[in-house]
Length: 114
Length: 116
Image (cartoon, rainbow over all chains, first blue to last red; front, top):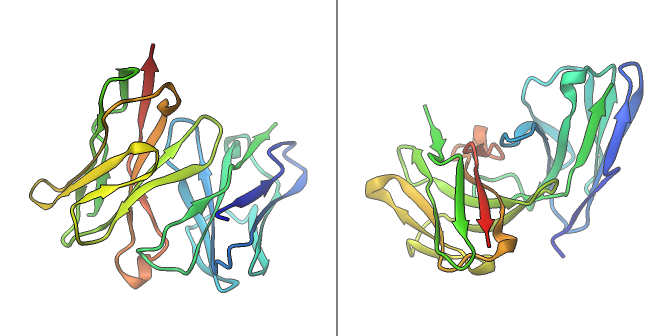
């Protein structure tokens, strides 16, 4: 099973709302990732967790707050977002954090900020 | 600076025809190379990858890619395209140093349109 699941599939929120995106994998992977993808562009890395510890933060604004409560779950908490934050948010996981490791992607959450 | 280039933004191909997508990289050593496909509104799916060894790599869905060190290329090919191959294709390089592990460098992507 090489499945990464993400909920919700779609999310519409106002600029003052607080919401969370959820990502789950049961492959025993110890590295998990958040990406942001705008239309017609490649994914942009936001955060990486390795063994439940934040390993990479690509200078993401603090209105995005990641959380990795256990090895299977990754959350992205959203607060006071801007319309330009509207995008497809992709979660991925890999066995470990290594250059050769394949990242397995979820289907994404389509976020619209009004 | 390290970079990945996909020269073709958009390719139109007839169903049943062959397809070749280009990917060029600029790295000092042999990079860790990946090809992913993304259908509209979906996540990315790995087609194939290359780290070392045989330079012709077989992937899923009938795709193959050839690593050519002399040309710094890792082009993706399929002999006969199906309508379901219409998608966005990304070439990516995996981070090669410990401080870049996990950081994929993606190309800009190539959109493939398949006509009847």
